Amino acid sequence: REAKGKMPVYKGLESYKLVEKMGDGAFSNVYKAIDLRSGQKVAVKVVRKYELSASQAGEKHLNREFKKKPRVTERANILKEVQIMRGINHPAIVKLLAFFESQEHYFLVLELMEGGELFHQIVKLTYFSENLARHVIVQVAQGIRYLHEERGVVHRDIKPENLLFERIPIVPSKNPLPKQFDEDKEDEGEFIPGVGGGGIGKVKIADFGLSKVVWDEQTMTPCGTVGYTAPEIVKDERYSKSVDMWAMGCVLYTLLCGFPPFYDESINVLTEKVARGYYTFLSPWWDTISSEAKDLITHLLCVDPAQRFTIDEFLAHPWVHAASGPVPPTP
Ligand code: ADP
Ligand code: MG
Image (cartoon, rainbow, N blue to C red; front, side, top):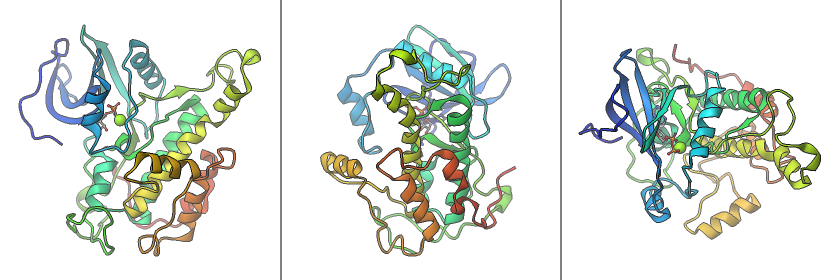
């Protein structure tokens, strides 16, 4: 998070006071802000209407993301993100409070998630205990279940950067295992649930920029005219929800050990590993993790989308229902 400095001034955003920058993407900046009319603290996602060149956009993300899909912020795209978010009302999904535009920007006023990205917490903690990981992933799963089963929406960009904590989690930890990627991380003591009224609290899904509606809300049938739809499209729609389940497998894997299931310096090798579904439960990091957790991951990181767990199968898995330790949700 950037130091509080001078905030930019956006024409058209006069009724909000920008407080600090919370995140940036290729085309968007997200700020903590105050709605000057109500005094409410919010997040404002400012999206530039014009495009950056692909190289400019890519460079910014090189150190954070393994691969950044080029993102075209056409009018239709941002309006789709807004339209999808407007139809959504669930405690595990970031709410859109308002939307407006100026000549140069779109402004999405969002429910403020003060705790920031799950990404940062993984970096800070190195990895989560099974109870903590369960507490996080079950909330994400409930959000996904709502999207898939009640709204016919596929998110398509589930990853730790798009999963946000409502409050800054109280997450001191003592790390008993060697760290794989970053030798310089500090040990921060054991997780103490509920200290100072804290704990890890609520986690919500953000960023509907790549999301898609796969079935018609009224008829509960696939979008578009079915009669003339090619088989690969019909199959595509049937399996599209499974992309979120794969991503949940990657998030759960990463939560439990602190590094992602698929990684390689070379993008070509990485792509091949993903295509084959080649990953391992690497020793010693996975030695102490339960076989139930591994079984669940195995059913999520399953190359054949027809075999992969659906959200209902995920929620019915024994690991999800294992006696969870004292990790109270933040009131
Ligand atoms: P992009 O499409 O550029 O990835 P996101 O919607 O994911 O845009 O927002 C970028 C980043 O801004 C997020 O990863 C997160 O760090 C931060 N952010 C987004 N929405 C919020 C919010 N409601 N509250 C706090 N931070 C947010
Ligand atoms: Mg994002």
